[in-house]
Image (spheres, rainbow, N blue to C red):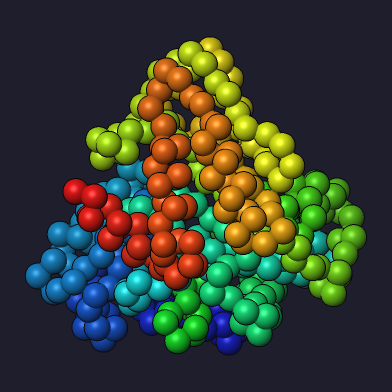
Length: 327
């Protein structure tokens, strides 16, 4: 990414091979820093280090978690940006050299580095910044020779400067909000690209229409530190209507096991603008019923009623601060 001219977060150029190397890099970047699993994803294998005395313990913890989840304990180090926005650009490319970006998604609403709610477009991104980030994302994909659907993830600081964080080389959980706003079927395009077909659209054809929000519905108990809630769904009612979409596979009588991620459904609301999407989401969450297991539905409803969310003035640290206030 650095070779392609894409802005990158200061840090190691590759894997950190020893504690001594990690100490030198951390001093150069300046604390706080992040130790991150190279094979990571979903917020796993990440540890924040605020001072030299914590580095060894946090590096060991990150390596152990990475080994357990990904079978690879390789880690790297990067500068920790305090309370940035997490904004990602959806790209898609075919095998004929055609690349386009489909706007951005704001994924700043996170708990323990795991996304809880996403929206498209981002409340902090204007047309100029969207174009800059989109072009940087396409450059990143071209640099790596990537084709198919992919997401370039950036951190955006308080000055609206953005930095490459990572690329997800797959379809993502939050892809439906991009589909709702652009009208572009990402999964269908993936199949066409795999069959050797060219993209059916060009960059100038992409237009963002309205606003979409996705809430991740998890089988977990927010009142008890979000502990997983496996069990059998005794009753289920999912909302519907104009602008409401459900992506999920659970049904009445379905048994949720303790072996996998706790997400059981995705609730998407698409409106004519952000306020309209929020109104629809509030209604949909209020109608959503899952009986037999605990869920985070009421917690999601609480989030979207917060003044910071309603104003769009929230960052990557908002949800942690919000949880601290509730204790």
